[in-house]
Length: 112
Length: 111
Image (cartoon, rainbow over all chains, first blue to last red; front, side, top):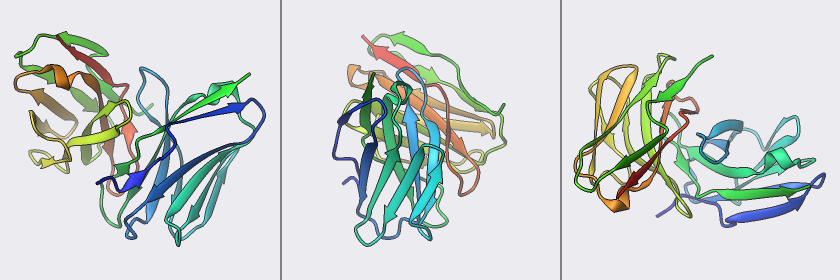
């Protein structure tokens, strides 16, 4: 049973607008969350993280929001650019544990 | 520049062959992982290792084995390749309680 879920397999957004990618999790023990971006034929690259002691973390155009009560996190990209077109994975881990659980990914297409 | 290097970007193997996928990291990381990525299924953990000569099964270990004789190297072995093992294979490493650094992936096709 997947503990981390990304229910939208794809998302299409116009350049310059906001992209919102969503992720839900079931394990209330998760305390550290990551977002990765993956281009075709390349490995995923780290994008942004958030610890459960925070509800928001921002890095340039990328902001991650964490709602612990809803077991939900989201990644906001503002403004979206065509180079952001990729598959985005969210991942989560429990305290003092080295293994991350990944969602199934959301393919973002930013149209020029 | 820190790196996780996977020895092959593309491989084509025949059904029944024994296949070795190699992964080397230069970050002195304790933890190493093998995932496969399939459309609609995301990243699924095959095996991982917390230390030299240690290994643990992930979510889908069937048909695979691993070897970690040195800290920097983690090998994935397909004992007898089958067509349902056609996939993108991703190696990753991490320090204790840290995020992953991924390799570029190996696209394996079993015919």
